[in-house]
Amino acid sequence: MKSNTQNKITKWDFGRVFLRSSFEQGSWNYERMHNLGFEFILVPVIRRLFPDSKSRSEAMIRHLAFFNTTPMMQSLISGVTINLEEQVANKQFAPDQINQVKTALMGPLASFGDPLWWIVLRPTIAAIAIELCTSKRPILGPIFFFVTWNVIRMGFRLVSQWVGYKRGLNILGIIQSPIIKNIIKGSSMFGMFLMGVMIARFVRIDISGFTSHSLIKMTNFSLMTAISSLISIGLTLVSIWLLRKRVNVVWIMLMIVVVCVGLSYIGIIN
Image 1 (tube, rainbow, N blue to C red):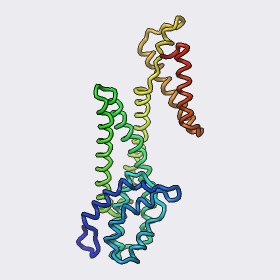
Image 2: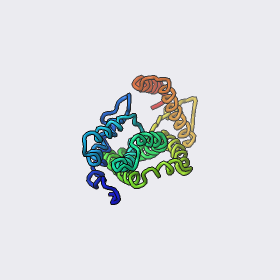
Image 3: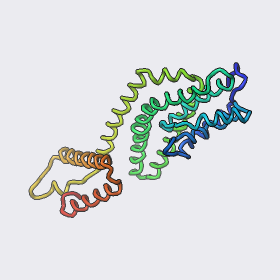
Image 4: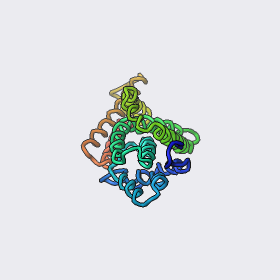
């Protein structure tokens, strides 16, 4: 890929790194998180650039250090690392600085990637898929989610790996720019908005039994809908509060079931 270097990777090596990228968390561990997976991803490159056993061992040991970031953002770091390892193989870069660069990239990319992937993209795709599940052809829901999520995920991995390889250390300046910070802030705000929409749309509590009680006659449909949505939001916030108090998810689900059955039995909800 680089004509001015003696030791260089091939397109086949680059493609093999991309194909391995989805297995980054296959050997996840509490001590060093994704380090073994990241090293597994780089094996084709290390074998190509370091033919002798000593330099190859040094390169392998180099990537046993702690590594943790948003899985999809890992490909950008992989691209940068390939660029740097290529320079190391040609005596153009100090090998002990590679982990410093990786560490400098992990945090900012996680701050950018977590809200983008887990708060914006995945919930949005899931919301559309859930809506399709309620249609006449519910099988379209999981198909849509699986295809859309993986096309976006793998497409982003391929492009970001290529950009990381081409840009090299210049990526550090890009991710520290004000534009990236604004994107992170906007993603978080949109994620909160989307969560509210999904709660109102999919967490439904039918209070028609309560509103039809002889003591309460509520004829305003909009008001009844608003009250139902507020109850749904309240239920969600209580669940989040319990999770932060380290209450087990199973116990929270059981409590919700018991409360709903009790309220239904006395005629408050249907």
